[in-house]
Image 1 (cartoon, rainbow, N blue to C red):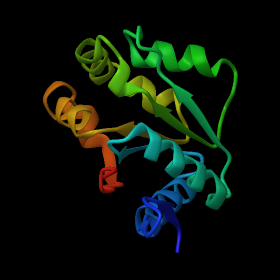
Image 2 (tube, one colour):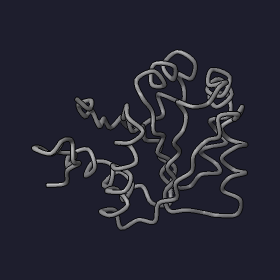
Image 3 (tube, rainbow, N blue to C red):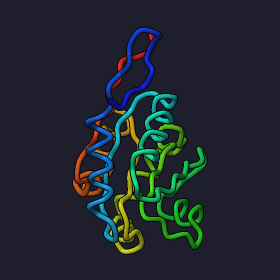
Length: 156
């Protein structure tokens, strides 16, 4: 069992969602695939990302969007530079100050994502960002192959 320590007495099983994410990343090598990974706690997100990198044989590049980001495409391409990862995980959307503007511009520029990112692109989101995607970037949201939920209980 792949698990995260939730308390001293139990573990939260994240085997199924991690396996789904690993499988999706592996089968889409060399082609654009948008995946949404939903987790509400940045601490748990970090733990899950550590497990994902441990169990996924694919080289995964991880970047965090700065809070001052205004456009997704430009920010990500600048952070990547000349790197061409096998898979890319983008986190930090929940901390972007101008998130509405960022999502609207990303929806408009979505074709550039498909052209430029020839690898799986995983966006780490929470329910608030997921809802904003539905309303502000519906075309981009519809491109997502799936939303993989890591619905872990909150710390007691």
